[in-house]
Length: 471
Image (cartoon, rainbow, N blue to C red; front, side, top):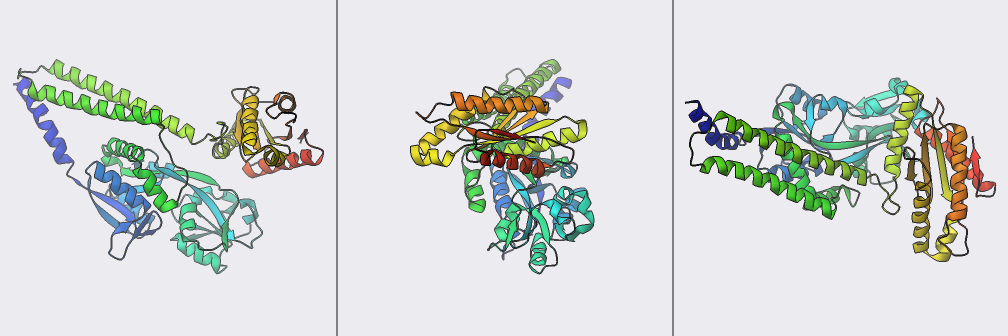
C-alpha cells in the first residue's frame, strides 16, 4: 500500500506543479518613478523596470496582475501586510532584504548630491549649514552624514525636491542619478563631481514566494545571453555599461541549462515509463538525493559565473588592471577597516610625465602601448595584497595595505626608478612618472585622502617631474 501511495505522488506531482504555477501573483508598481516605473494615459504601467520584468515573466509563463501605488511607503506596507508578491527591479539595501528576497543583480546606479550650477559648495562637508532634500524611505536617508540630520528636508517624491531646489527652498538634494538625469533638460542643476555610493538592483520577491527566485534568476541570465536585456537597457539609459557574458561563459551557461533540463526530463520519463509499478521507498529517496546533488553542482557553477562577471566589471578594458569603479569601493573598504581596526594604508598616485606629447608625437597606438607595458611592469613589482588601479587616462593609484609609511616611500621610489630604467617601449625616449604619496589619518574620507595625494602629485610635477613628493 505504501509503495502504491509513493507511485501516486510521483505521477501527480508534475500536475500539481503545473496547477501551482497558475497562481496570479500581485506585482506592486509605483506610478510616478521614471524611468523605472510610470503609468501611461491608458492606466498601463511602463518604464525600464516594467519592461524588463514583463520580459522575464513571459519567459517563465508567470501569471500576474499589477497593484499601482503612489509611493514606496505603500509598496513596503503591501509587503508587510502580505498583499504583494513582487516588485520589479528595485535597489538592493539591507533594510529591504529584511522585507523581501532579491534575484541576481540586473543593473546598478549611482547616488548623487545635486545643487544649482552656480552654487559654490563641492562636497557633503560644505552642506553642514545647508538644507538638504531627501525622499522618505529612500537610501539617501542613510547615506547622508549623521551630522547633517537636522538639515534634512523630507519630500514624498524626487520631483518635489527638484522644484524646491529651483525655488531656493533647499540648497541641495540627494537622489538616484537615473531619476534626475531622466528629468533634467538643462544644466542649471548639476551633481557633485563624485557620486556617494553605487547601488545594485534586482527584482524583489516576497519571502512567501521564495520558489520564484530560481526561475527569475534563470530567466534573467537568458535575457542577458540573448541580447534582449541590452536592448531594454539602452532604450531607457543609452549605451552605458552593463554585464555581458563572454563567448566561453555563454557556451558554458547554455550547456549547463540544457544539462539540467535534460536530466529533469530523463528522471520524469524514467518514472512515467517504468514497467515495474512497485517502487521502494529507498529507490525514491536515492533518486531525490541524486537530483538534489545535481542541482547543487549546477547552482555552484552559476555562482562562479556570476562572480567572474562581477570581476569583469571592475577591470579596465585596455590595461586589465582595476578601474575607477572598483577603486572607489576598495578605498571605502580600507577606510572602514582603518577606522574600525586602525589598519593603516598608504595612498600612492602617479601619472605619466608629458603623456600628451607622447600621443602627439608617436600616435595613440604608441600611447596605448606605454600604458599597457607600464601597468604590466608595475604589477610585477608590487605585492599580491596591494591594489593597482587606472583612475584616469594616464593616471594611476596604488593602495598599499598594511604597510608602514617608510616602506611605502621605498615602494614609490622603486616604482619611479623601474619605470625610468626598464620601460623602453618607445625608441630613444625615456618614460617617467611623477608620484604623490600620503598615509591615511583619522580625519580622512575618500575625498580628503584623494585630494591630498593629488596635490602632492602636482607638486612633483611643478618641481621638475620624475620624482616622489610625500606628506
